[in-house]
Image 1 (cartoon, helix red, strand yellow):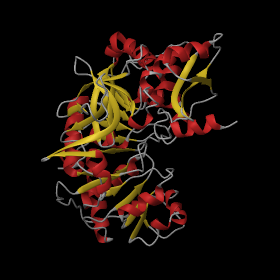
Image 2 (tube, helix red, strand yellow; image 1 turned 180 degrees about the horizontal axis):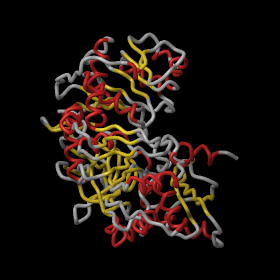
Image 3 (tube, helix red, strand yellow; image 1 turned 90 degrees about the vertical axis):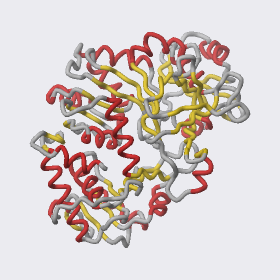
Image 4 (spheres, one colour; image 1 turned 180 degrees about the vertical axis):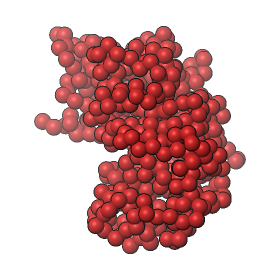
Length: 492
């Protein structure tokens, strides 16, 4: 079963998707439109198994195209066009078609890998040869694809090496949907505002009405919080999910105005370390919501979760003391273990977090080298190496201490950075290795005298240096870009 079967099951007058423009689509209309689009794609020669790049902003057109391609049996390729490895990623997957917004079709002029494909489909006019998606129609189609065949191909960020291609099968997506639906508790009674396309698919499959955020999610730092707040109020949104960088300006704007979001019952955040100070703000502005930090990765989502009150009442104190960042207990259907002594683990129990389960990616797309480096096979069972270091406490909770490649000497970033950020004068801190030294960079405001020496002594860093801004990842705008930070620190 795939998301298209769930849309077909839910077909009816209830609203499925709402755009900021006011455009809406019911579940019945979504089922009809995606079925007709699948039939049209077949007529154009995009038959089962042919891989198609899909590149559109988060709008109704994106989900019509995505579900239509699923119904046609075409594996969908998604990528970040701003990533430095686009050409390499495109060359790996062997595309047959390109379905995109008019603006995205201009990438055909930049990347040779997008030229000479069988079919080009655009959601509007583009001067390059194409078929207009909105004019395409055909006999309603829903291909009965093999459960283990690829449905969705995406790329890792490459934070632990070159980017890898992750192929999610229909069976994988269904296992993920089942776990997310059970864990998040979404139902047809919910009005959801998700900011991640894959989370939106799960919300749709659960029957929730999905309100598409009035925001350019490619630049989370530039989101206008007033627009999103207005959407939540106007539609009475009951749930939402997004990165901590998405929620921080929203929470700050609400606190400035003395306002709240009383309709929210569930708020999920993750994708980067979520500071306790942000959780404290969210508890204030969403007083009726269950606020939860979700830990996962491209290859396994979700892995674990923890509610805000548990962080604020207990684990935040440990974070400030240098114990790491607690991401909670593993979700049902997933097993977690820490690599044993003799590999990465030390006497403190710290090692690499490894996971196994039905919604854990079993292998990368046509990449045996990546499989050998990141998958541990024990008979029919596959353990995925997350690239995160951490340990389990006596309650079975996972505490992360950083990435495998980000350890500096004996120091783990998440055991150092929160200690620094607990100081009132430090907004953000990041640990990197520079010329053999452990350097702690800090964004500061009105620091006290001798603060650098005191912080170096407390954290074990060789040097503490002030910086104007710590570079962050473009995807979530919340993770430290350590390579970029090293470049900043090297400048005279």
